[in-house]
Length: 523
Image 1 (tube, rainbow, N blue to C red):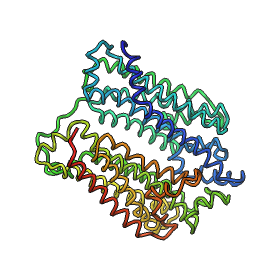
Image 2: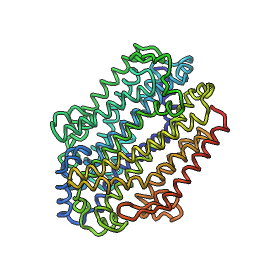
Image 3: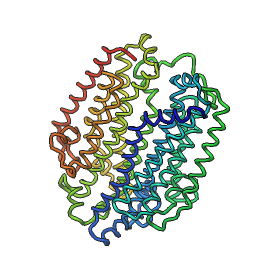
Image 4: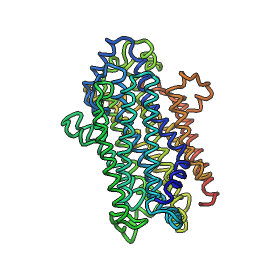
């Protein structure tokens, strides 16, 4: 363990802003549920009616968890936030462990550091310590935010510390995945599969056979029944799983070579098929998993929104403020609600587009771009291939969201026309999604170090959408969000001029990014 404390201080310093960003996101997730539900219903009768409608909707149960005490503020926060909070903790743990284990070995820095007087397990222990402290901070801040809201203290701390235990559990599985996989992407694939399987088991178990929910760490977290008959003993399950997984990871670490995984890596074919001999074909091969994953995830979310059907009035409540909030675009309340849902799905599609636009940077960081452009593959074809895959992927994700939204409504109401009426409006947000992706490509084209700033426009769009009026942001700042200029279809009439102008602007930004990439040196 010699040098573990030094590594730990170094990792914490490198991750201080990243961990704070994850923690802020988790706090916002839990606190915003309390704030939004608190202002939505004005009477208990109204709250009871909405809770009954939510608990009887299988799509809601599959998405959020078993309905308990939904006619209370704490019960709503627990129901709406815990499943997604566990996913946030799991993703944070996975990325922190991957960054300080597999990624360090791939870059060669770990081998360089091991040439000094440090112990064999020092970096692994420091990575574990970083993830444990990050999850502890996550849980404490969530608990304090709910306690200060104010909600009941014991139940608030149960939600926070349960979230910490779940994060520690997924930290253990990520450590095991880092020993099994031979690459960072392979490690993310294994750890992400465990996280996805945990969510799926909980969803299927909550709707059907409840035994399956007890096979999921997320189900253990929700079994604490915060704000509905709190019990502490389920938190021992993720803690025990975390200890077992961490011990397994240490045992496996001692049995593998540095830079290699325990799972054998299959060699690829000695010749590339014709489809891989172009920039577009190569980009699609690299990004097809990301496109399919986002497409399915966003479509499933849209299906859940669509499954609300005509119960929008019951869920929104009778208060004037909540109805004005959803009907701010005017027109029918159902159309206004689905216009807001379409905007939220479009913001999710932006998440895909920006993540996809950042893929060229990781390829360059890994040193593969320099070898590629040394062949007959022009720089413009390589960059353009990734840009085209991002654009087509954004179209596919938005189309999947539209089909999910309209299909969910069709399943509940039998209204076949809803597939077009609710699904087509997603297309109206395509220029905004493409513009945010183009800005990320432009930043990457100028310098890979700037590429991560591509997330800032999406953060601005989310803040403007959810808190623009609450924070009384100046109009010029709100106008910087491209979504601010597009119509809330189907609640409003389509605005074609902003649609066309944003398309042209996205094309110009993308072209500028291509020119900038051609003129700079590769790292």
